[in-house]
Image (cartoon, rainbow over all chains, first blue to last red; front, side):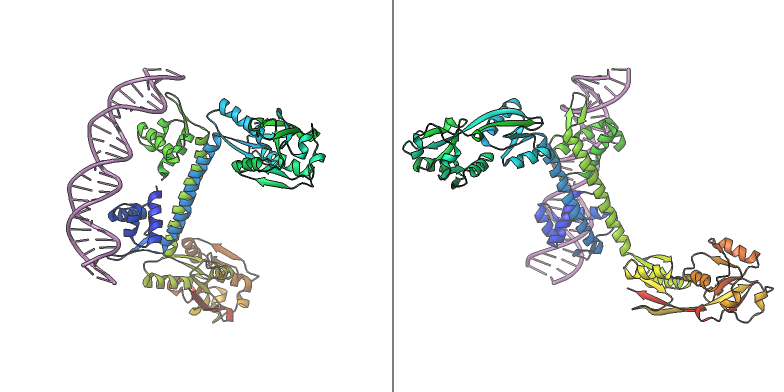
Length: 259
Length: 259
DNA sequence: AGGCATTACGCTGGACGTAAAAATT
DNA sequence: AATTTTTACGTCCAGCGTAATGCCT
């Protein structure tokens, strides 16, 4: 049976030109390489080299063998990687969520109930969550509407978050119509919330900040309104007030589908 | 680096079910197989088996690895075979000829001038010779007409061969028209000659005999006419006479194309 | 003189097999 | 009792490196 290690030495010889350099490359002695190449010729059953007294080079068959070896080695690597990836997949739960809050909850649940499993999660748009669920490329899906086999998972309500002296601060409750036109601070990775806001508030501009620390600083330093929900109250900003939104769409029930 | 031998033991385990049987199959001890499988798991970097106290079976990753191993092993075999075939091709001159006589001559030439080369030859129809030459699947081509880069190789003339008491024996020379309608003994593997005869003698029937010994017996035993040429005179039949054909088409110049 | 491939040769680590253990049927 | 997997252990040789050879530039 052919030895992949020797094959890769053959490829190295094609690239480096001399057995000596291959020996360096592989951190072994030159006699060892010589033997490997001889052994390889035996394994193939055909000569691969033209040998001079102190010179060795690939013959035509040898050159062809190098090309064949390259692809076989690539295939061998691919095989190993595929097996490793399959194994990783066996021990990973892939979650696609339309929003951050239910994902945090779900990750907690999974970590306690199946501590041996890795969790790979992503927040994305509803349609991406749905298609990932449908084509089997995720194990759990969180969506803001029920689908076949999904259970209600948690409810989340949206609040506007402004400094106490902001003109919106005087209201007991607000609607999207009331706040449409105001410019908002927004975080990235909000999934479905992001889309909802842009839809309901077409006249507003959104200042999007990917970095959580920077976002917090901005919230504290500026008087721009932002959003919060009853699931992130823990992170309430001390010098801001939260005003509930009364629209239907700001009260969301998330549904969880599991395989 | 992954060991193909161990990989094939893994495949054997999938097929045979126990390590003991794999050991038999490979004519080695069971501890050796145990070690191979352990080593394979290290090489992949992931577990492949579910182990009981005296039981071992493939886990899901293991089953997947077996499938991947099967294809990789097939690819490895293919690689070796391709290299061997390439080498064989390097030492083989493939000849396509439209007729036997020039092929005999050419084989003699090649055998003396390039004694290290194998010769692989076939007699076939003109169009097959031509297409093989054009698509590069032969190294030398013999055709009864000149083509780009071909040289005249030899001339051959056709004779009718009949017993002395045959009604055709009285002629000094014959034409295809004269012999059209007579039934002839014919050998197989005549290539272009075969086609020519059938074309020029549509009223004749041909008794085709693939076996050279049997053909000779038939010639001696029957009074059916047959063909010969000035290139097979050595094999003249003692109790037959050869009458030349005078048609243009019975005097053929073969052209040889070499790469 | 320095670089290269190959042969000669001694050594060692790894791979093998035997024996045995432990469990299951 | 027979079968199966795995560990323990002793043996041995395949493969390694060093040294040396022969050759070329």
